[in-house]
Image (cartoon, rainbow, N blue to C red; front, side, top):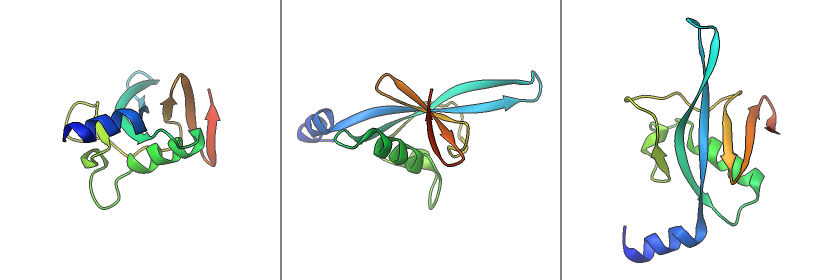
Amino acid sequence: MTKIDALLDTLYKEKVVVIHNDFSYMTMEKDAVAVAEVKVDATLTTSEKLEQAFMLTNSIDDAWWNNKEITKLFEGSYARSTMNGDMVIVGDEKFKVEPMGWKKM
């Protein structure tokens, strides 16, 4: 990345955090794990940022963590795609993926 690219990223990109809820059958509890920082266009609406983070953390043609807009936060070589019940933090607000849309937490 060139210096100008880094400057443009700072000016026009915002990092949002994607959190996956994983249910443990051993403890019968949900564990929330931050799996990714996603760089999204800072000029998007909150809804558009949520949708972009969701789309970028779903594997389609390749593993989602190979996307250039993703900073991988999970350990190991694999993480599932984002789905219902997971969360995304935009700024200081947290949103939960619902079957249809998002719910502010």
